[in-house]
Each structure stands twice: as C-alpha cells, then as structure tokens.
Image (cartoon, rainbow, N blue to C red):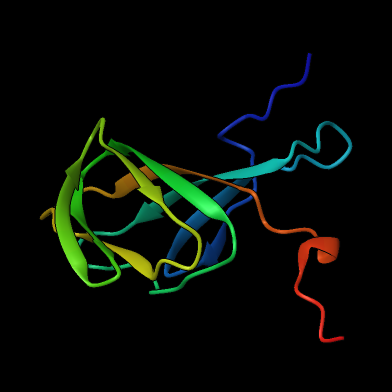
Length: 119
C-alpha cells in the first residue's frame, strides 16, 4: 500500500493557483491519465488555457464560475465539468472567503504516432 499524505505532499504554483499533482506518481503508478488537486484563492482566477487532452473538474469546496470557450457557468461543491480537447477554460473563485477547490483529471493526449504527418 502507498499513501500520499496531504500534509507533506508538494504543491506548486501552476495555472494561476496552488496545484498538487497526484498522478502519474513516480515510482508507484503511471496510469494513462493524470490527476491533481487545485486551489484558487478568493477573488482570483486560473489562467485561461487549452490542451490536447480531455479533462474533467470535480469541485470539492467553494463557489465560483467556470468559463469554457467563452460560456460562463456557476460552480460549487459537487459539480462536475467535462472539458473537450482544445477547449479554452479557466475558473474564478467568487467566494468572499475560502479557496475554490477541485480535482482535475486528464486523459487521452494523442501519442506521437497519432499526430498528422507532414509527408
């Protein structure tokens, strides 16, 4: 059994928030997907970006909004959002206090062999 303790795990500043990468987990597991917890402080927002993976956010705490390709919707604890490949997205913490917390899971980046050929 392997346990990653929340209290001792590494956090980085990525995408405009506090990011705690979970998978792949070096020396333990390399699944075909990645995962992380993200926290966005009150009044802040994550960096708008897109990527070649599909992704889902599962909101754990706080209140905010999510913008996906210019469409903005409210989000709160228990909400789940699916993000298609190349969709431009970011979240905003609209709460007066407390972080907007969510679990990020991504999968399905095309392998190098799946990329279109210039030939």
